[in-house]
View 1 (spheres, rainbow, N blue to C red):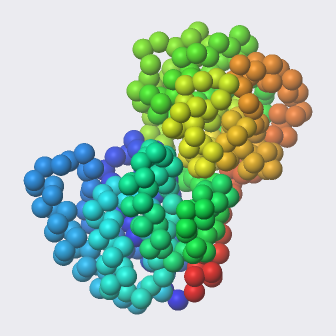
View 2 (cartoon, rainbow, N blue to C red):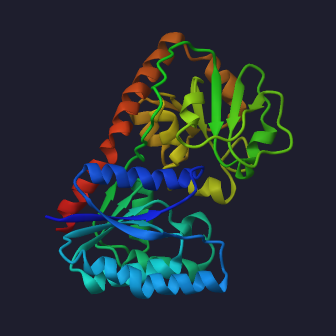
Length: 345
């Protein structure tokens, strides 16, 4: 059986979203998948005439030529979505046209949930693309349920959590001092400006910080996904989104109920247990694997952390260390790929 995975180029080493795609590709290669490299870089914000001509060339010449050389493929894996809807449409059409392969999507984001929840026209176009797949790897059961509710009938496998290639040493420190770290895109994390913790210190990493944060927060700048784990020495990593402390609100808070945030993998691959919103889709995974805490309200964080004993923390920490080793090996990616290939063939 000949299995392929599509890989595209990107020149942004600071892009955390790109990190997830690179890791899926690497672990798929380790699992025996061959590469179909799209030898061009897409700049979504470039709407110049030159960029449009380049995309036209890619769609009419480059992509068909690549797929004609992969006409022996049994399975082709595509990481959904692509940064250019125009090229994504042509790529999917040409896979169907030039190969007899089963087309499998590894979903990174469903924009119909994430950004365009109330825009029926966008959702219809996205569902049309999703229905082109012969099999799908979704983040988790809530995402799978959403897909099925919206008419997706092909086999779906749940990933569970994104694996994470992490070049840094796993943090083995068992000392418990009630410290927390938050890493992410800070312009959508306005809840941080309202945080008022007395006993807990929160360290912050990421782009686009607010002008000012409360005294309990220390901002430490922006680092690449490869460099950041070196700085993760805290007891817990926080997964939270939106404007409020007592819930995860707004568009991004809503999306937490369906997705597997990559920062969860960043923390756990570093051996750092996770604190996550109790209604997040990932909360079940965190609790079942005993690698962190699921909470309702950040206002309670001081009290919650004060109730954890040193021995309880050591147990959670050791589970996170064990999880780190699995994530660094690509266990969840390889398992999901093996399962979906069996189901579509």
